[in-house]
View 1: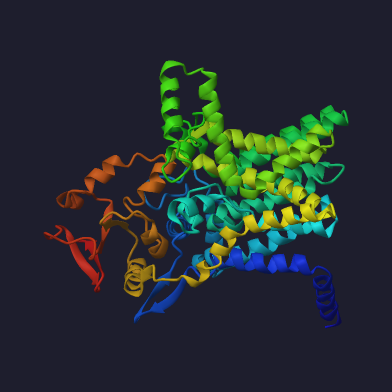
View 2: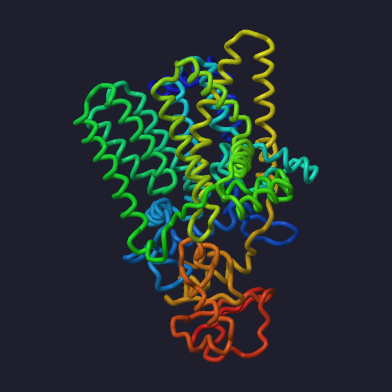
Length: 554
């Protein structure tokens, strides 16, 4: 009891002496946890009940729940929305963890929407504070770093104000921002081993134990997000080269490099099954500036039709024109500016450090990693969903938080009123998106009705068999709640993974041909979307309510 009192007293004293930092943690907790915690809960509205799942989570969360509930019951792991296909080319590590948690009685819903987000936030808060303190013990710097690491946001709200006269930055697809990390749970948890690696690299000397630990953290990061693994591999390699070349430890550099590279290769083989995934073509294709061109092409972005016309003309007559390259670079700058938001000031700090020749080894490693991830974003497209390479840039923004914090710290440390006011302006320009996000926990509506949940529970209780929904569903929610695999569903995920689903898609369009597909054991029919114009031959109704009909093969 005495020890418990001592711990609480220590916490009380710390909070008392770190009021600003404590305030940041509290506000960040509301912003981050609030965007996900209430999803997966049962609510009632206007005499109707059902499950709430936030719209920004709806598709992806159902896909991950489907994996956790139906993909890992046999080896090789199976694709829940395309029965018979193995799980390939996808970061399923977090789903495997959720599956293992179900084996000790923790439901996938609880793990995904509540347990993991809370554990993430507490762990991320501690590691962020630890990294900031190892960098600079000043409370001002720590507060600036935590501000950007929790609230760093884009300038998309400026576009929404201009085009739609409303503060709604969520209109725009963008790289992952600080305040929205938990919209992509795999990205969020990948930052824990990533940040842990940065903390280890703060050590002046790296032992062999440190190297093996970094290798393990690289495996975990890659398992959660391939994009993060690629960036961390570059960051670790850059740090080790600069560190050990300076110390002239060339043999140790080779040993360390082999450990780190082997860890990454092991993670790719273990989690992504590249030998199968590559059969449908390369995952990434070289296509410079494909992602940034929408900045001047899209009507709801920085629409510049004359520049677009000039670019198309130059591409056709002189693809090596300096003017064409200038247009492409301008589009790339707009992409960086829009996504970076106020973190763009970090480039001022970097430039000043380089010109004054005061840039540290750690800062050089971070800066080179930012350049690397930015180049990957702007020069590649991805198989399936071409614009998915924007996820590389999320790690650029994560690292940019450091430089933005340094710039803000310099402003507040200068003791000049004008610079302090400039710092306040930067903070104010960062907050609109986060303030907008505060309303999300209070905007709850029924996503899946109680009648459909009952039907899914009934389907779960039926003997094992493949399900086909009528009409075809664009999410994996049937597998998520029933645990059963589907003949075909979620075209978006199949496209990303690289599955050729055209044959199956055509086979279910003719209702008379469904009986000829032996894999299909159950039909899950949504009455509101599908009207039976004729009896489905070979199937008998085994469950029905006002919304759903479940039919079983005779």
